[in-house]
Amino acid sequence: MIVDAHAHVFPPAVRERREALVASEPAFAEIYRKPRATMATAGEVLASMDEAGVDRTVIVNFAWRDEALVDETNAYILDAASRSGGRLIPFVSMPPARGGHGGPQFEDAPQAAGGRPGDPRAKIRALAAAGARGIGELRPESLGWDLADSDEADLLAWAASAYDLTLLFHVSEPVGHPYAGKQGLRVEALASFAATAAGVNIIAAHWGGGLPFYTLMPEVREALATTWFDTAAGHLLYDAAIYRRTIDLVGAGRIVFGSDFPLVSQADALARARAAGLSGDELDAISGGNARQIFGL
Image (cartoon, rainbow, N blue to C red; front, side):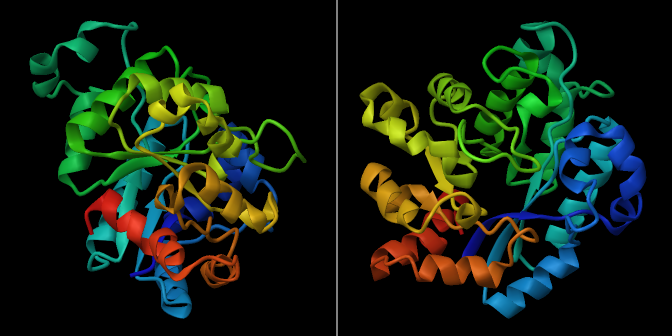
């Protein structure tokens, strides 16, 4: 089983509103203001999977500010996954948190169970019941909230723990060349969150922005015990030695194949993984075995 843990989809109706969204959604505009930045539908992901020989694909949402847009795109992703016969694994966007930090809605589970209109816990409960397997691709800094201390961080930790949802973060390397969409989660913020949300499954995109290096520090290694690093768009950032260096640091069991489709074709991304000089066991773990463990496939 080949599993792509990182691909992007948009509803056709959202793609048609691209120009309007560029004007109203800053994070979206940073990546998609240029026409050459491709947007794919769920059907196009499935066609790509057929061509590349990929069995399962995690389809992720985006860091929207507009709550109505969050709801619209979540509904599309969940519907597409339900129609795919298990081939698509849905990751949804998180509804915005409400109320003051540490307020009752974040600490009083019975009250949240009442399903107040607009309550983010009630929305997450409904998303999990509809088949969501994770939340992401998360871009806290693009949305202006702090992963270290915010209502949103509290909500994420609760949702992941309560409903076994994996969190996929866009993590940026602090050095190197600039590119559209580079702004993402700082490695220190992710390490801090992982330490406080022990046991929560996390995928740190784009090789975790270099975070595996810091696992040479015992306290960081312990904090990242349930964090995996995906290979999405890795060849645009690193040379092929990134596979061997990261295996040396965290082991092949902590790396998951991701393409970042449609930015990178799934076939090309898979070919690069197969050409990275891995052993058969390492390639099997990275290309699907680890994801099977995370998602219980």
